[in-house]
Image (cartoon, rainbow, N blue to C red; front, side):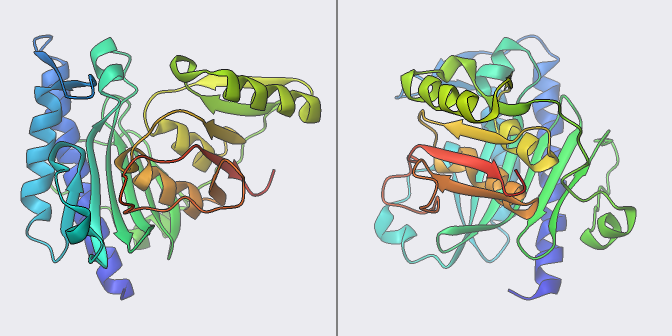
Length: 276
């Protein structure tokens, strides 16, 4: 893909993520939203639906198809022919949204065949924006102002302002990030093995794709995920982590994590900093 097109598309999805995030926060601050259960018993709110509509309506004007958590009924026979497509989770961390802990995100990624090449993760409660491409690396912007109607954040400007990831981080202990709600025997054993190698370790619990972003920032060394996730949960964070010097593999630490599979459920995977 041409560099100029990458920059243009990145501007589009950045503005969309912020716009969707603002709508999510409007509902979050209203203290009044209905919670429904989807067929897999996962929660759904009006915030998920509204954010999906905002993103879907605009991305439909681009040249690429869309695969979104809230509009995922696209057959594999159709999907497998896509060279490029948008992979969207309009509200990643609905459970965190309902718990009101602020650890939820808007995820938009562009996938080339089976590989994420561009992604934006926006945490509207925290006002943190993460941007990543395989071409230009990854960046973070703090204190986003969602009321700025332009919000045209360019890669060129980010490179000049030196917002690139990872940031320097002086950690005393080897740091693991994960979800306590998905702790299981496989994860516990993996952590015990890391203790044997690294001695004292620190475990940080974090919601949504912010776990991947922590690796990108350099705030953690490894993220083992031995519990179910879907492709839209990880696509944007995946490319941001890779753009910041991480590797993303299946549990064997060798096989790449790929996308647009017949079954959109991710296998168990590991995200790890290359420099550690």
